[in-house]
Image (cartoon, rainbow, N blue to C red; front, side, top):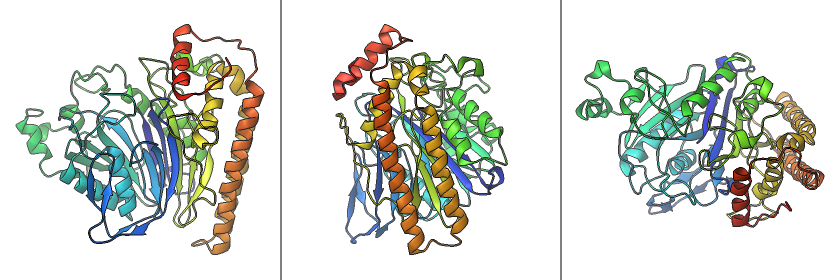
Length: 466
C-alpha cells in the first residue's frame, strides 16, 4: 500500500517539478538503493525481469532505483534525463495473470529506455500490451498480486497512468496530483487504450461511451482492498487508498504555488491524525489511512520501507532518499543526477539482518523507536531536522552556484555532498541507537503488537535486547 504525489511547475515555489513517494511493503522486505549505469547491448540481447525474459534494447540509461531486494524492478526511481516514476497497487474487474511483467518491472524498463515522461508512458503501455502484467508482487506474502497505476514525471510534465490488465488510461497533470491504492481517473482523461471503452461496454461495466467512467466502471464492488467513495459508493476495508489520497491532496493544496521538497517530505511523514493526537500517538495505533505507514499486524501488515522526494530542475535533479523505512524516523539524503550518483555505493541488504547494510542499519533504530515511540524519537528528532537543514543549504548553494549543465568541478562537489550526507547519517544513526537502546520503556504497547514485531525480529535475526 503506497502513496505517490507530484506538483508541476505552476504549483511549486521555484517553478520546478517535485515528486514524492512512500513505498509500503511487508516489514522485512528490504528496500535497497541502487545506482545502475547505462550500457550498450547487442542485437540479440535479452533482459531477465522478475518472472519473464524479454528482448533488450540497444541502449539503456543511467538509473537510480529504490527497490525491494528480491525483484528486478523498482518501487520508484529516476534516470539521467530526470524521468521519475512511482507506482501503486490497484485492483480491477479484470483478471490478474499468474505471470508477466510486474508493475515494478515496467517502471525500471521505462526508466532505462526513456528520455521523457511521455516516452516512458508509451514504453510502459507498449510493454503492457505485449507481455501483460502479472505474478506474485510481495516477498513472503502469498496471494498479494495486483494491477498498477503510475505517476510519471520529468522536468517539464507529469502523467497519471492507470491500468486494468492490458488496458490503460492516462491523464496529464495540471497542478497537484496524488494517487494511492485505488483507481482514480474518471471520464476526464487525455490518452486511452483504443479498445478500453468498447471492452467496458461489452463486459457490461457501462452502457455507452457517455456512461464511461474508468474508476467507477472498473473498480470491483466487493474487492476487499479497494477504496473509493464516489457514486455508487464502494466499501473499503484494508487498503484505505481513497483516505490516503484525500489526505495527501489536502496537505499539498495548503501550499499550492509555493510547494518545496521539504513540504513533500512532511506529506510523506504525515500520520493522518488530528493535531491534538500527535503528542501521544504511537505506531501501535496506526491505521491504513496513514501516508507514513506503520505495520501493526493483520489489519495493517505493511510499513513504509523506503521514501523518495525528487526535485526536478532542468540541468540538475536532486533526489532526497531515506534508503530506510519509516520516513518519520528516518533522514532524507541528497543524490544528484544526471551523471553524478554515488562515489561510494550503499551496501545492499537482503532478508537477514546485516548492520553494515544501509537499510538494516536504520531498521534497528526504527524498531527500537517503535517500542516507545514518543520518548525515543524525541531524543533525536531535533538532530535529524538539523541534519536535513544542513544538507538543504548545501544543495541550494549548488543550485545558486551552478548555471547550465554542471561541469566536472561541480560534479565533484555534488558527489562529495552525497558522500558526506550518507556517512554523517550512518554515524548519527549509530549514535541514536546507542542513546535509546537502554532507555526504560514508559509507554508500553499492547501484547499483540509486541508479539507481531518480536516474530519479525526473530525471522530476520535482529536482536533488540528487549
